[in-house]
Length: 150
Length: 406
Image 1 (tube, each protein chain N blue to C red):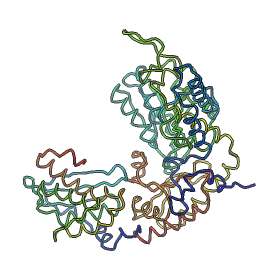
Image 2: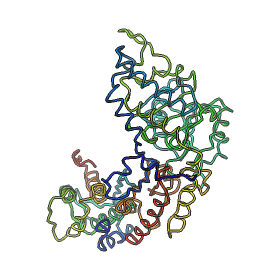
Image 3: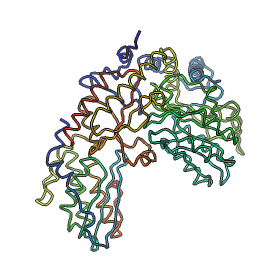
Image 4: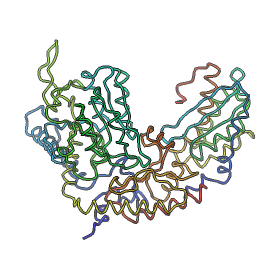
């Protein structure tokens, strides 16, 4: 059962490198840890107002966290603060067992459906998206909703 | 006769529980330990037949409860080889050390020094950082050798006339490295500094002789030595408790109280405010009494064999690096390891599917992780109920983890 969440597609995403040097300055940096397991996500973000126009990631963490960050980098271009908040909520819902339909851009997130039965791993998948929301909020000076528990 | 780990494992209902769906290879004893039958029975017996508040009322039930609680204090004292007058019941090691940090505060000035090591659990690090932020003391850190032992060659350079306390682990919860306490005490005595030992890990591996160790304070948790959560101990050398102000205020720790003020009760009573964790303390006493009946000469040999087998087994797996001493004499059976290319969280997830309970993470020791340039390790922490079958299962599980993850 444990191997279910380590599909070839997820491993491929986890091993996809992000070229963190490509993003032109200026950009902001956001770093977020999962204190439970030692995952650390670092995102470089280019914003126009509250809209993401460029992102790269660097993750020191588990395979699921790295894979999730790869999906984020592939698909988050153009996200606003509200989009990021919406994505985090939908990803959380999927992990909590709710049926979620993904758009073509975000279809890769369906690969993490199998993680829903492993509660202790939800945080690994969510961490990059929490970092994205926090980064956009800080960059655009938007107050973060406490209920998001970043 | 060799040690029969199976016979001891059978005394722990949790380890035999059908809830696991097969044999549970429990290798997270550094995090918490299961409770054996005699301890569970003692807890139920107390709560069923002798439960009342302690040191307050005078009816027979209350007297029995108080006697049970104080007998537990005596059991702690016997296990530590000390007088019970210095034994304070707390909620655990973390509260014990916070109590000490707060109570010592009044006697510390800005510029005074507390020495810790880079191997400390956060519970023996953060209270001193918080004291630094409140009072302006300096924190000095003993660095680590490449095998995780404290680099005590640096101790003489760190100790000074301003050193008031050396607070170090008796044994690391990450590397298993056992501290050379004699060198710590010797260095402290040169400058009149006191010594606190964090005994959270060491206490489960046999009775402690605090008189021989020569330290001033010792802290440990019940749940790490086969007793319930919610109870622990701070021991202080005779006379020290009366020289310290109280940490928490409330019922039970007072002599006289008026609208204008209060007097603190003498000795350990001055540090046990509110209703204590009574049943838990009674169970802790039972656990320590039970531990004192065990054949520690045989257990020590068994643990050394576990250490040898585990180190040899992990060395035989490609890409696995153990963080800790390779000499059994310098360590407990606690093994943190790194597998190249695989994260501990993933490794432990796969091991869990094989009935192997290990912890993956920073183990509340982030400065130690920094010393080894790691974010996290996988950790197998063994006790006398583990055997070669557990180690063989771990090796098989790690090889499967390699196949899945790499």
